[in-house]
Length: 374
Image (cartoon, rainbow, N blue to C red):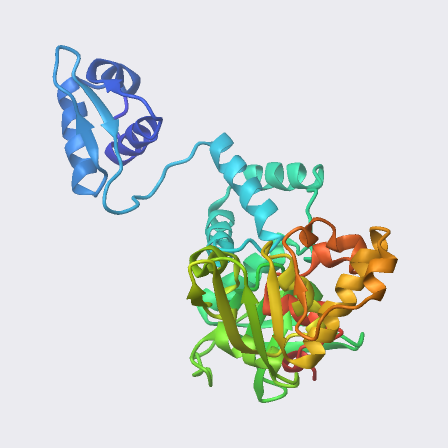
């Protein structure tokens, strides 16, 4: 019989989190208490915010159901290991939509993992290799969790950093935010040695160390870490006015466009036009438009028209259509929807083209980010 009420409540909660209905008699037997005690314990859980639903009948049962808020979970050893391994596998790659949340969850879980479970997680992680697509760099989950912890705790972070040109340095920073671009992780931080804000590619960071020294967060110039990163990347890139028409309705094209490109304007029921100011490499933009999977016509700038023309000719040559390509397209270049089936070989790896502005610099501008240059 479990006489320790807190321990009994945790055991009861663990049982209820199994997706099934538990008869009161079975719960009483599992806990070694009376049914009356079970009912009192259920009431205590409800007071703590756990939505426990009861069903009537001779063997009245209990079930934990979805509520308005996410209550704390109780995990057994196997569940904790499974979740930690899954979070570690995902945290090493930038996962669009859940990137920062996955790192925060991993940091919280690893902080309370017992040593015996931490060893099991590390062993399993070392014995497995994920097969991933794209050019996103692999990152040690420990690097992300250390950074996430220092961001959350306002703790100074020291690490070794390798710049784009190979220069190595030691940095002492006040970390502000981790930002994922879909393929890469970046740290936005205040560099104490350089007395200025910087962005750091996390895959170029090594030996991260939480110093234990607390700091009062500074105000970021742009207010948003994502906006600061975006400006940092485009600071030394020449912007241009993109003008393209798609042979598809706006509500069909819009979901396939990255948010930073804006929203296309409907032309009629069957077409839409996109006008935006961008700073990405024109070669990459040509491939990005091709990968949208709709017929399109580029109106400007002229350099982008040339890139699309060359891409179309290269794809035609790759498909054995060199004679057709020699005729040359009209000034406003159009490409059809069938083209996206083979950009990889035709455009020199276009199928791996980045889907975000952060990776755009890697594809077209030598992967140099102004904010991370000493």
